[in-house]
Length: 281
Image 1 (cartoon, helix red, strand yellow):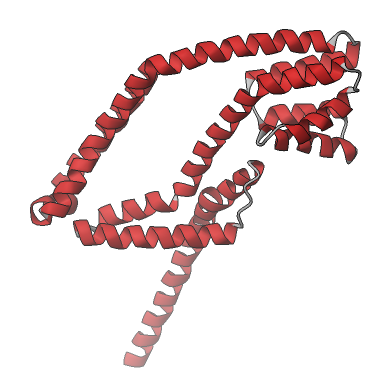
Image 2 (tube, helix red, strand yellow; image 1 turned 90 degrees about the vertical axis):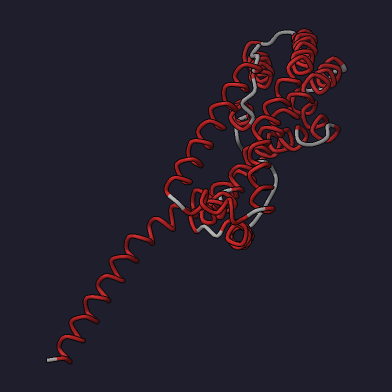
C-alpha cells in the first residue's frame, strides 16, 4: 500500500513538473525573444552586429550580479528580482537609446551631404554615381545607410524601392524630403541641384532653431534628471549606511506599497517634466 502511495505521489509530481515546464517554456521563449533576439536584430539595423547568444550570456551574467548585489544590500527577494529583471531587459533600453542617437546623427549629417550631392549633380554626375561617391565620402552613420542603398540597387532592387527602404530605416522628416526630391526627379525630371540647394538651406535653418531650443530647455532637462535621480540615490545611500533601518522598506507589504508609490510618483514627475520641456517643430 505504501509503495502504491509513493508511486502515485511520484506520478503526480511528474505531472506537475511537466505542467509547470509547459507553462514556463513559452514564457521563457517570449522573454528571450523580446529581451534578447529583438534588440540584437535592431542593433544589426544600426550596423552593430552582436550574436544573440553572446548578448544572452552577458545579460544573464549582469542580471545575476545585480541579483546578488541587491540581495546583499536589501535582503529582499522582491527588490533583488526586480533589479535583476531590469538589468536583463537593459539591452532593449540601450538599443532604443542608440537608435535615437543614430537617427539624430543622420539628421545632423544630411544638410552637408545634400550640399555635396547637389555639387556632384551640378558637375554632371548621374544620380546613382553621385550617391555612390557621397556614400564613400560621408562618414558613418549616413555613409553606411547610403552604401546600403547603393548595394541593394546593384543587387537588383529598384532605385525607388531602395530609397523608400532608407526612409523606413531612418524615419526622419529630412530623409523623407530628400527621398521625395530624388524620386520626383527620377520620375518627372527637373533641376535636382536647385531643389537640393533649397532643401539644404531649409534644413540648416531648422537645425539652428532646434539648437537654440535645446539650449533654452537644457536647464529643464537637467532638473528632470536631478529630481528623478536624487530620491533614488538617497535611498541607495541610506540602504548602504543603515541597512537595518531600511530593511522594512524592502521586506514588508507596507514597504512595498511605499516603493510602488515612489516608483509611480517618480515616473509621473519625469514624464511631466519631459513633456513640459519638449518642443516640437
